[in-house]
Image (cartoon, rainbow, N blue to C red; front, side):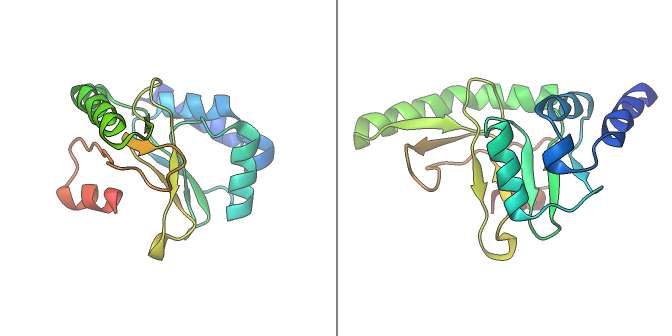
Amino acid sequence: MEHHAKDRIDRILDRIHSLEEDLAVDDIIELRRISESSRVLDKFKVSRAEYWNWLDKIGDDTRGVEYDAQNARIVLKGGLGWMHEAAADVVRKVLYQIRDRLNATTGSRYFLTGSIDMLITPSCCSLPGDFDGSTKQADASPMEYEAKWPAVVLEIGISETTSNLYKDTE
């Protein structure tokens, strides 16, 4: 990361001391735009209730924000790189076809969720088991209205090991 970008990130993080009072949507957008990698906000701990209250306050259409319940931290996903976006573009048409086919064959209404594109509605899933209370946002997934889980989940990894991709999709 170039020196100028690191300075900008540090300036933003210096003024953030709590989740509910200091972390605004504009800060999230700016941090994700500047940073190519994910960032754990480790300046303060966040309870599950604080996270959900904050999410209600700022709106749940904010992209790239996940909650790590085990460490009580907010995770900001890095900005989408060009390779990630290119890979998402390749499969986006397939996901629309899957959605349309599900709509036609089941009679239900499916929509696309995810974090890859402004055209796709974001959706966080609460994780069970060892990660109970944490949230994860898939890159994209067709999901039936009012369903608890997506029908298909797409997780894109550029230069990631297969085991890391499996962990992301669990």
